[in-house]
Image (cartoon, rainbow, N blue to C red; front, top):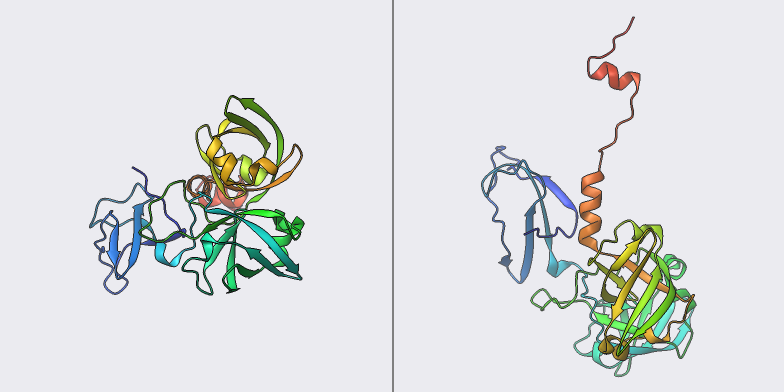
Length: 274
């Protein structure tokens, strides 16, 4: 089973003091309320006490979501970078500094009261997500960041929108619907059949990806509990590719290409100075 690394933090698992291999189990390890994910990403790893390349993360310190929308909120006001959202469920147990995904974009709660919470949206988020097109009265998907001991119902979602996609069309299939989307290049390269993708923060399963287009089957519960039914053909949506797929893709393609040059030939003994 492949266990995902979350922070892409890699290091040689040797003790820096005496350069001896460090023992680190390949299991979930609970340490003072923190859950560590440890996995070997390099085939050189020999075992629990062997040297190699490891990846680790502390879920308790990360802002992760599951793509299971908790409620539909409503934009109360938008003043400059400050967005005020009316909500109920996500306010339960909320503290300043907590993360809430708004249509799949991770935002930090800077203030809240009994019926609303406020976030500050950066210029980049306004530009690269659909948050820039919101207006008072609009409804949005909301989800709180997951706790380390929480059941994972969807898939790992960071709340880091990769780009804006577009609704291409929709087909009725009895009580279900088949939605068709066009993805930006930042998402399309990671799409695989039955893989995961987050659309406006909703965890969905990819169907029939062809180049930059793909489909998803929508169940009645998703139609009822999210803002997806409000999206018409041509509407823009936030998209985030599966983080595990992104990490594997970049790990497999990192530094894999070398151009043929005189320096390369000299370095490998195929050429020498005259």
